[in-house]
Image (cartoon, rainbow, N blue to C red; front, side):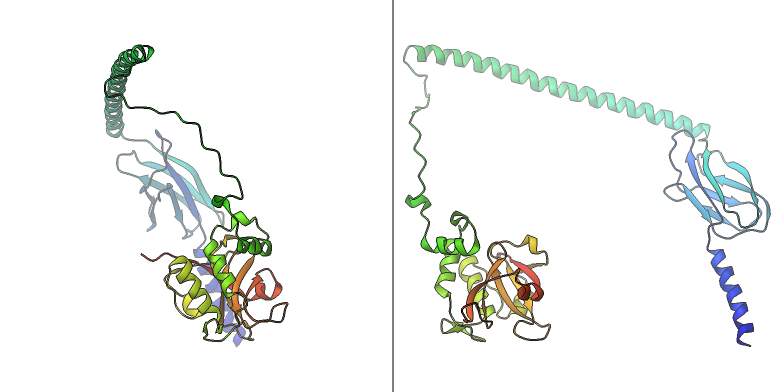
Length: 342
């Protein structure tokens, strides 16, 4: 009984599927311009089937007709209609590769008039542009002539050791020598040297000296959950402190709030990281996926943060870690750029 019920269902499914397949399609072009025609009406005569061409001049019929010969009529305002025959045989797909419609005589005339008008307007525009350029060139020649006359007078006065009326005084000095490295202008601090070695960069690259002075000031301060002083500080308090003191941006208190802050432009590409970007982690110190840790990126994959994790010396707190280490790489979730307040 189940087989008997299933068979009509499969037949119906096949009929629906076949009905959606393309049966007859084609493309309609403007014979004069060789461009597709949109909105041409394609009718299969003596049937209920009619389609309009799309922006690419295409039409598609999906309803298959009984075998036989059918007349196709294609019409479009301002074009002569086109009639041709198709033979429907079995399951063969029919394709009219390129149907050309010839513009009516009136349309051809209108196109010629429009082309003449466009050409006329182009000539007027070209003439106006040529006149504008000629006027500019004439004015430049006039100015050059006046300048040359004035320069000759000045050169004659200068040859006699005199200057022109209201001529500015020009003084000539030897160029000042470039300050040498080691002078006050380019003095490298001990803090720059220390962190340049840690980050494997040139000390001169560490231009944000205030940032590294602050890191040095808080270096090795112990980790304390919810702490905000040098007796103990947590990760988000430390990044909040840096954002406020160094970048003059006031961000929220917790790592999650900082991640969702309006003052953070969040991104995920590690290769886009830049000094001063915040980096966020999940499940630090815990076996869950909660976003619960934040640090501040420096250089070459290194970042500064306050963490309950112990460093190589067995200490927690403010320290510099490597984002490429297996532990931090697996915990990384996203980064965020501090946005200046308006």
